[in-house]
Length: 564
Ligand code: NOJ
Image 1 (tube, rainbow, N blue to C red):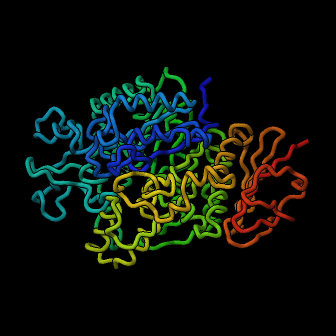
Image 2: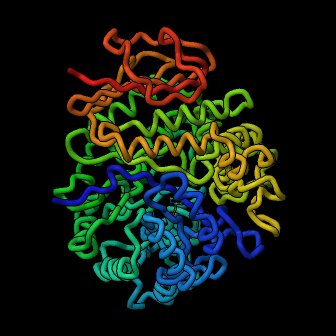
Image 3: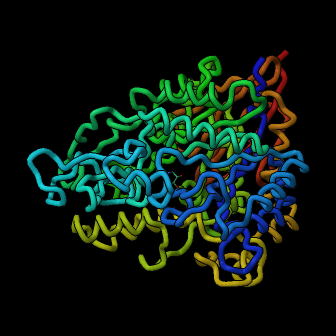
């Protein structure tokens, strides 16, 4: 039988630039991670996922890789990496790496060779195309397709030397690799095997459902007011995606034991995810879907939409039901691309920050699936109080701002309001370790300023306080490790039309769990089946248990009962 150990695992994501800086240059590094491994072991973490640590010009903070088989010197060396891996394993944890192979850096030797000339043996490793028929290269509209890049501007960059364009779905320093070319695929598999042979335990795969493109690349749909077409139908879950992932599985993972593979898949549907994660098909163990983090987004990207809890519940319910029999869910609120959940779906005011952070953790972790914690989430870290666009460092925020304000004529205030709430730099401010300067992240000048609330919100204070978010997250991890119904129980959503309460049950054999979270600042009474009176309260995030099923603001509860 396949070993599905990751069903009972808790994963913790580290964004190395922002985690801990041991040498004072203002950037996090591997030595800094080594210094803090006990913080993670103490939290009950089973697996660490490292965002990219490879050599990189850092155009997109390491998601632009110029050498897949080495370590970025700012972060350390392969020797220090081996030390880190040994430290992780010695504490009974595993380590997975970020695999970024939809694109490389434009400074990767593969791309340098590819761009050297039309007859380069590696020309076809990337997507090179001439100007649109009848148009001169470099003239408006001459790009091979009308696709916009995720970071603003066209997805095509003209290379003056050959007069051809190359495709970059992200920044122009992130050219897309051409997976149609079998040499590209075998070079990637060889690299993956090299890391696994070194002892790592799997991969998180960056935008992996974009590697198969529709050939020939088609124009995308143009909507009123937008400068570029939406090319997603040409590259999301493309025609050969399952074939490529199955080939990768055969060439890399088959025959190895106990790996974890998780594919990041923007725009993936439940039906597709079922295929991707069916163990019998040999593709990936689980996917990151985006529906629940896009729940507060409307058609207009520059309009903030308040969260409707009924909508969020409908999304989770669809995913829980869809992958109930076949496949597996990943569970997350936060990562390095999302704003802080407590500021987004909770309440980060002094009165409710801790309660709502714990409530969000409870509701998420008790679903069926593997939970992911993003650095600082276990402290209830919040969004940063950005004032001006100059405080942002993220290429996405800066690129989208330029497109929206300079080219589309949006008002700077309108755009800033959304970036403040949703911008990725909210997640990337330094990890808050203690109350000393820069949150104890660095003795130098941090590459991005620490959130000014660090004197109060930091790991040292959290570890010393038995009522902190940190110790509560530890209890959630313990529950997953000790209560089989958390891992394998069936999921049933309750109160789907309630706008304040999120409630569901998990059932395995004779054990049933009831989870309720109050997503509001009001006291709210839950209409609960009589059968639950007398059930054991396993966990709540507030000092007092609810009376008569009335949950205090942002309260969460987990009850357990035995069925006769
Ligand atoms: C998804 C990553 O999570 C994000 O940070 C990055 O910018 C893009 N993929 C491009 O690699």
